[in-house]
Image 1 (cartoon, rainbow, N blue to C red):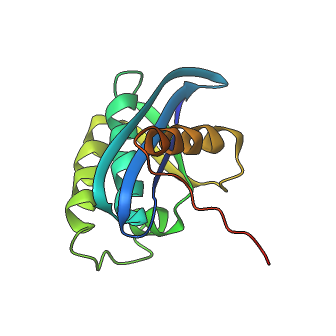
Image 2: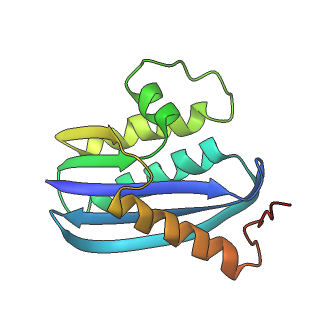
Length: 142
């Protein structure tokens, strides 16, 4: 079984966005990827873009995959529990549906962001944003 961990995020919502993806077999990481995806990106768009890249990458390693992601919205839309109401998400949702045809078995699993592999995907996307000068805001209590 091939596993993917994908994460998308932005600084601001909308704001500059990036994705982080890793593909693994059991505990062995096969490949990692990160990319800046634009300046006016929402968190949900970034999550879908990350999943799309994960599916594209995973297709090179096997036909049975489990996709792990920390977006409850995306997972529930893929399971049909939530409707895709946002017109900017619909083409991304449909692209995921099309990419699913490349696999014999595909599972989607919601994981908490504290998951070890999910943290790696998160670090990949945050490094991508930071290297382009988009820093996390720091809040000071006081």
